[in-house]
Image (cartoon, rainbow, N blue to C red; front, side, top):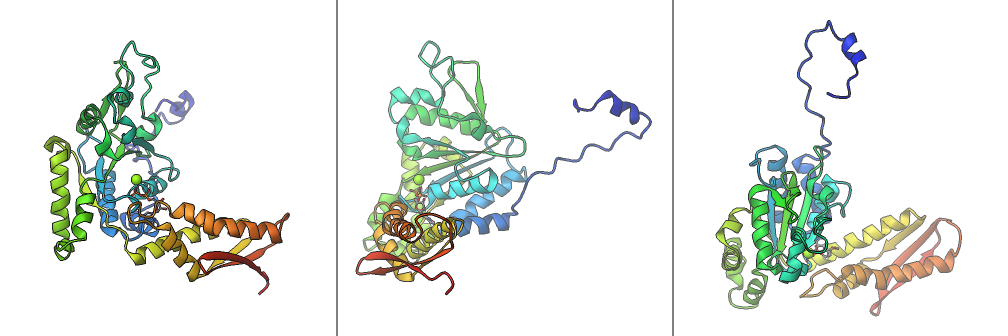
Length: 348
Ligand SMILES: Nc1ncnc2c1ncn2[C@@H]1O[C@H](COP(=O)(O)OP(=O)(O)O)[C@@H](O)[C@H]1O
Ligand SMILES: [Mg+2]
């Protein structure tokens, strides 16, 4: 305890030897159950995926994992726009300071050998080697003794094979040696998430065919995905993954709930500005229909919400209340394919 002064020692010289210091009280706001609830409130219709992620986090936090590896390595599979990245962002919100407080590595950008070098920094003699420039942000990867780091390798199957080999090393011993030979980054306190679309095309193809009823049984879906994984990744790589979760395509009802969730978030933002926004079910339905795409899932929903809901609401706010902060009520309803925002009497 280097910060204890001599004076402290003088005062305490005659005391009994102190009991061993209690373990520091970690900021653990969530039990596994409340963590699962919190994640379920933001990522809808993906409960099995959330359960698997919570399981991996719980094992890691309890120290029930191997010490010389990342404490959790979770592979998230499924089609585009169904909540894979969003789930990792919400884990960051729960465990770190917010949804963007994580190190995201876009493996797509490491598809070519030329760029692959930035995974572990430029080798000696190359531009950038002195700075040990890598795609990793040390503080979000390593965390601190009270906070895990979070790393997201997005679209992992897109990376160049040399990057996948380096990644295997990281999953194996939790250490990435930078190419300048002097530094390393530790992943031994990092929750590692990988996302991939592998197997999704095959699942979608079969869904449209006579396989459908078979696919509805979870284990058959699993077999399709496992096949795709095994034909792409080496067994060593798959062995390093603690949990593999398959996200479902969003069904109609879930899409409506996601649209409602997004309008609720807008509502909460506006409430802080003195605006009470009511979004009619008709408007939510229109957003769900226009914001959802069979190929891109809910990816376009936020933009749709911005142009079709937030913009008319903002225009109405500026019309009725160009300056000032007087309380205001606005109702948004859909009629003939567009959303109309109308100010109503705040007293009513
Ligand atoms: N299951 C879901 N629950 C809530 N929002 C979702 C869900 N799926 C997608 N979204 C919305 O769509 C956006 C894109 O989803 P994202 O997680 O980035 O997709 P991907 O699965 O391709 O990583 C998210 O930011 C979120 O607004
Ligand atoms: Mg994603």
